[in-house]
Length: 87
Image (tube, rainbow, N blue to C red):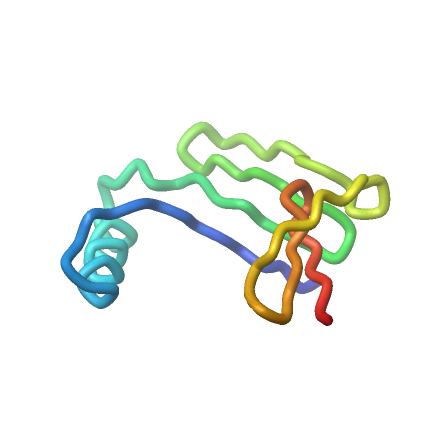
């Protein structure tokens, strides 16, 4: 099965490159506690906490009552399940 894995963290930086470098440094640190991921399959979205060995199903995509937000000029993304709608 194919999964989309998202890891998100905010950084203060002087450029996009510096922000990406800071994120990469955190990801590669073996003592990092940045171990929380959102994992999406075709059926559902899960929150996965590797530090505490927990997997929590966030939503079944088929059951979602979509709340569409503009992702960019041609894409809407559901705030609840992450589904995308192109237009």
